[in-house]
Image 1 (cartoon, one colour):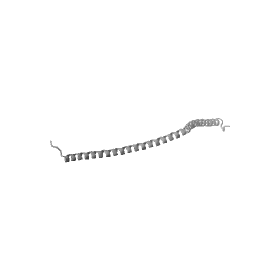
Image 2 (cartoon, rainbow, N blue to C red):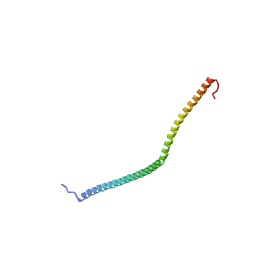
Image 3 (cartoon, one colour):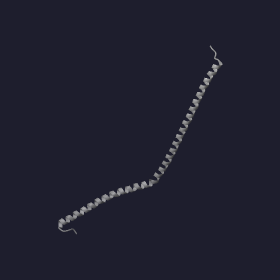
Image 4 (cartoon, helix red, strand yellow):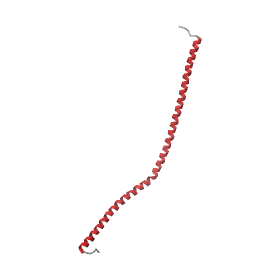
Length: 120
């Protein structure tokens, strides 16, 4: 067993201190990187929060606009139903009119065939 000299101990101690300093520098750099990463995460989170707030605001406006036009759409549905009914009624009356005209023409033709003169 040989004893170290004071100079050798001092050199070994200086090496250990250099290693400790290097480890501290590495930890400090990792701490800075972690802080920067957290900062970017917080900034991204804040940007997302603002975007969600904007979307919520726009959605509230859209809901108000839809609520504002509900009476108009209900009225539109009533008018559409009336128009559909009027169209069907018009087709029915048109068919009835054609039948009346055909009957009148048939009666006039029958009158003419029977009497030989134009109907009164």
